[in-house]
Amino acid sequence: MSATNASGISSAKYQTLKRFLALYGVLVIVILALLGTLYHQYAKTQMISSHRLAMQLESESYVPVLKQWLEQDRNLKTFPQDLAYATALYGYDQKLLVGNLKNNSLNFKESITMEEGFVHLIVPLAPYGLGEFYLVFETSDDGLWQTQAIEKAFLLGLLLFTFLLLIGFILARLLLRPMNEAIALLDDFIKDTTHELNTPISAILTNLEALNGEQIPESMQKKLKRIEIASRTISTLYDDLTYLILNHDLALVNEPLNVSELLEERLEYFRHRIEQKKIHLELTIAPHIFLVIDRTKMTRILDNLLSNAIKYNKMNGTIAIGLNEGILCIEDNGIGIPASMITQVFERYTRADKSVGGFGIGLHIVAMIAKEYNLDITIESEERTRTKICIGWK
Image (cartoon, rainbow, N blue to C red; front, side):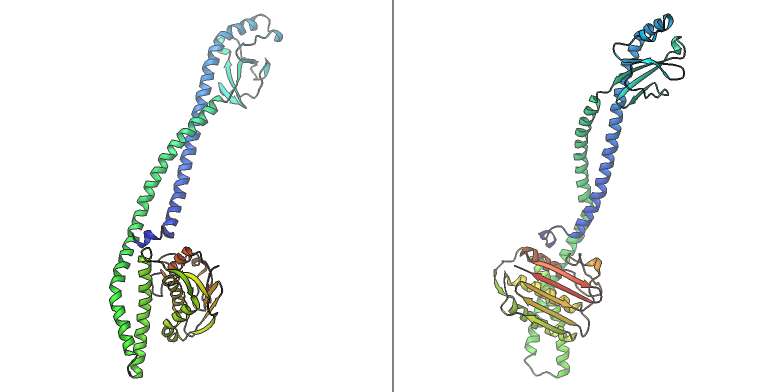
């Protein structure tokens, strides 16, 4: 299992996936809405066509009765009503002469219309030799066709949505494959680099410790100090890479850890790097502050916070370190973090300033460990002014 897989999907993949799914989701909704609208219109057309056929058949038997009435008395009181449909007679000016329609809102430009829940068939009587009259049949729409259309559209839409969801899942996998391959390649590179770094780093640090006990000219001591600073920087990076790759295989030893003593120890480890940049330390470290945590993991937290405070600080800068019951804060007055980057600095391979070396994994490791132990992380930063990171626990 790679380190990438062990830590779950990366934020970059989340963002890519979210954008793709948002676009794909909008497209699916538009397609389903369009298909639903077309199906509803089709069902309505079928319903109207059904009524048209039935009304036209009825009119064939009704027109002779109406013709007899028009030719004999035309008494409005004896106007023949059809037994199947509400019936009305309109004059040449399209005004109502007689009838019992429930809805008189008619469009005489169409032969059949549906208005406000009523279907009307308009039959011109001129072709029957009965003058410029209009016969209108009316029936109410019971809405059954609409209920059936909605049920069918829902079932078909559900099937289509499932199918499109499957297609989207396949497309998402194809879309993320290049990113997965790139991350896997980077992980392999980190593994190979880590393996190659181990032996030379150990040899350099071992020999430097041996030389420190000998009488060496001051000019050489400065050179050796620079070598030691560089070696310890590489050693810190090596420890981060090793942890990132092997954290799921490490044996945990969670025990009450004296964070105060460990912090003093790590400050001594970074002493030469602090002196090299002439950084002033402001320490407020309460004694005997304990936290139940694995020592290796707490060391990674301290080393990464201290390393960043040094790395991103300026010459003659200041680092303020405060450790009290339940909280550790480390603040520097270095380059700061752009506001747009603050929410991203804990993501893997993210660096606020790419002009400074590193893989961008330090704060990601801090975030991983904090999540594992339910530690609270807060970060405050102003670009080119300061950065303050606090780790809190109960």
